[in-house]
Image (cartoon, rainbow, N blue to C red; front, side):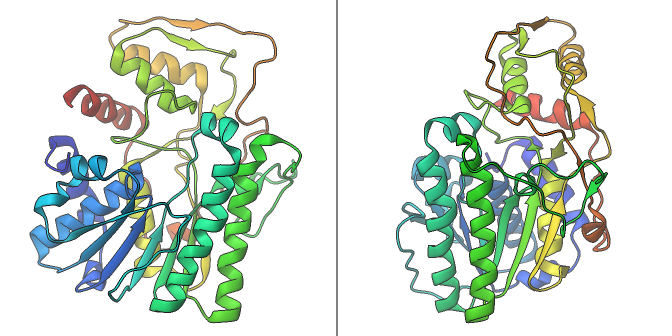
Length: 347
């Protein structure tokens, strides 16, 4: 997939927006959950630096599915991508130096959250513990990808959520397994910094989409709508679509992560979200219908006892801290969706 036309344009765009990339020269980087969308784009970026900037970066990719990794990166024919085939819940052993660990091994798929909550908790807690033990041994800096969901239900007086704000989570609700375990993972990282002097940075990310996202049986609204669009099936909403969301295209998310790693304050937390184009779900559905030249219909099918993914009222994230590092979203929603649909139709 690395040589896909849209991927190549995306990676070039990322490269053009990231200064100080020489910080990665001759570095060894472990990426956990390396088959995920954001993780894969990070691997593509480091491959690009090796191919075009002679950065000599060694990329350790921790995955459970080697076939998917090879399909994405052609790692069988590259010397700079080294597969680590295991579950993140098992002890991680690498007989080499490590400079950075980008820890992304976590399943945010709503259907998995409902069906496999224990697995979600294990990957976020035990997986993070294994990563931190490795970081302690190797004296590596940890970049942890957390979620906006750690904020929970914030006070109605808060208009934009800052990194220092915190709301309520309901530990007796099944789907709290995801944000609660992400909170615990963050606290583990902070505890390791206090007790073992681990260096870290945390990004709380919201609603990223783009090439490589899961569009089959996922449960997140953008994933499901893109899946409908690729197969040109009618868009069926389980509500009236009045809830609002704001979506961040993959290149903007990766640029944000890289800027945090390169220029972010040590042992600090950053919100990463594109809040420039908030949109109602119903309007998103009709936007996709328009992009498909009205080949599909939007159908509202409300059923009783609909199990909504998130019931908290949406509150915008404050991205001021990240913007001070020179980051701002560049890909408009329409353009990002067009790119994503085009990518899936090309593979």
